[in-house]
Image 1 (spheres, helix red, strand yellow):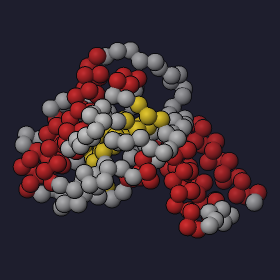
Image 2: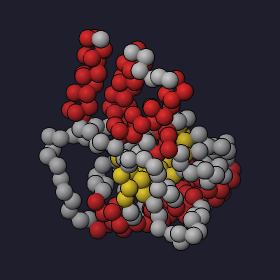
Image 3: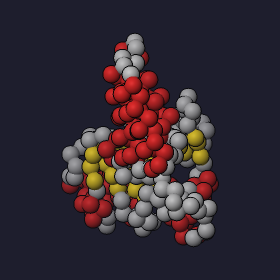
Length: 235
């Protein structure tokens, strides 16, 4: 259970943050991550609504942005109530059975007001939609968290043997991938690649989307970083 974290991106309400802590503790999880919360964190209302999960709130890590929050996560699954116009893998709740929970898995939840934007989705390895009434998709944040927590808890307890890659193949961490992407971006900027400038945000979004969904190994990340560095030298 310690390998799974529940990441709340820009939560709006104190009650929901506390309820999410309470929700994950019901299923033996203890890692809650909060990114740029609207209310002061922590506060009395968060503590009160967490009920018996106060220690989760106390240990909760707070980050200013999404990139820093997922730096030490191996695999990010973004929850979304709608399909995206992006070339990103989409899985169902049942397909969580294929996830290797020995890795550090992060479930990413958007804010109550607007969910996750496309620029935030690109940091995920895949998206996942909780099946609901197609004519009424209106789950509360804590409801979404508790559904995912229950399903994941059940799958972990099944203790089914999963496909194992060679021990020599180590997946790249989000930190490794971020460093590689930042190197690539800096080299492209030095070549004035991002033209016209008004299209730079969407170009960066698409670039991150390509690399984050590739599930690169440490070796592959090092090779690509070396390629980007050497291309700059020859330019």
